[in-house]
Image 1 (spheres, rainbow, N blue to C red):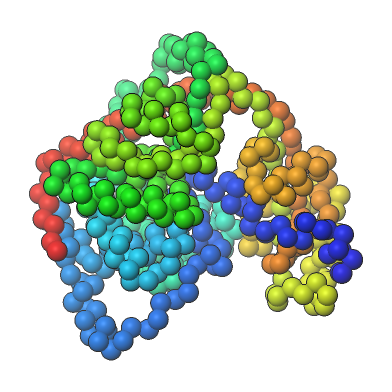
Image 2: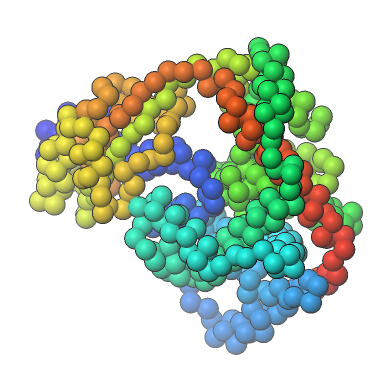
Length: 454
């Protein structure tokens, strides 16, 4: 065991979750992904004092808004705020929940409007639909059935806080598709025109951007909204995952993809945003920008020239053998020795063997489809993957938490900037969905009777 640790060198310090976190932003409902790792959750809150317990019922059952006759309670606001704080790794102190309260309240008001419209139009969203979405989340994160709800309860969050959000997102997506009607059918002529325009821009800059859009429907509320978006930017710069914040708070349709706008040209942004994005370095998060309808927060992930982006893509399989005690390299336990030997037995074997070894573990064997080698983080992980031959598993990679084995299943280099007909169709449809969603949300708010209570 000691020899195995010594031989691995830098690899002994590779974080076991590094590979999983590299693709989290690509998943829908990204805000719940951190729940798949209990170590990321915050400690439970201290038990309330007797005075707090006496006042709790009146506070949690308090009505904070009435939306066309439907109430939003302080319990719902606190639950959603805690859900965000947990996923964003912000802690669960009272000041965090209180800071989030105004925007979470507004978010829940908008969700009420959306769900009312979904119900008015008779668009079904069944309990099984929600259960399927939860099972998909659990499956992507290697969780057994029911584990997600258990982790939420262990963190002091009622699972309904998540289930209601999922139900709303499913219903609103179906409503927008229905609203699009024939506009949702993209003709071959439209696709050809889109691709021709894309080719004509070859060599021009494109930006891979994520966004959070916070609307301002009432001019009187703008200072409060501005304070909130400034706080969100501060949290993002301190390490809150952008997909988590976007999924919880953004009122753009891109919230379903963790705020991912895809590759975007400067002229596709609001002029004020486009000017800022063109000057940002990759990895930067801009200050909030006032745009028509609200504030937009953007993060620049990558830059490229239109039609030109050669990249190496790999698909991986991983097997992780956790340690049951803290690792002391000078005195490994029997369980730790056995974990290393199980990993050593996989060295040089093919991807199906690694996938089989990972079955039943708490980490998914597939970390997320095709991954770009040049953007894989941390650098130690990128160097390991780059040096692995296709179809042969790595030597054991010892971490403080356990032993990881990686296998590269496929490796190919291609021009990622080439626009296929399917990609063109998807981009046209996303643009139409986003425009329709914002227009309908504004119409619902304008027609609604909303009573906000202190």
